[in-house]
Image (tube, rainbow, N blue to C red; front, side, top):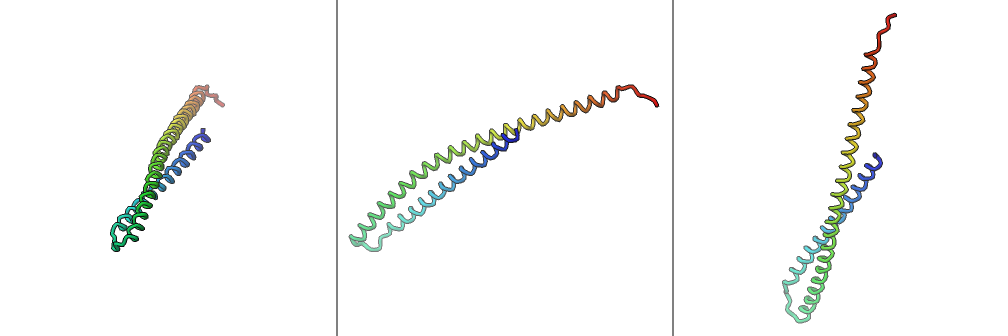
Length: 133
């Protein structure tokens, strides 16, 4: 029973780590989106109105939009994976708790049996006839 409980605890820790990694990756993607959005906003402030400069800015804006789209797709994928990992964490916690409760119940039953045996032995000793020397 102890080995199974230890396995469940290790499994729970691994699942939690996987969830944490996914959460950090998702936060990184969100940070990238904010940075690209700020860069795009700053690019809109055109100080030079030449045709060549505007064409370069237009191509760069298109590239920024493409990168933002990729990051958004990655974010959605990571979010789905994080949700699945969270469900795994919940499942692993439930499995561990069930085993811990079962182990506790078995311990209580064992202690009751030991106490019952001790009482039985004490009763037998008390019922023996006393021998006088």
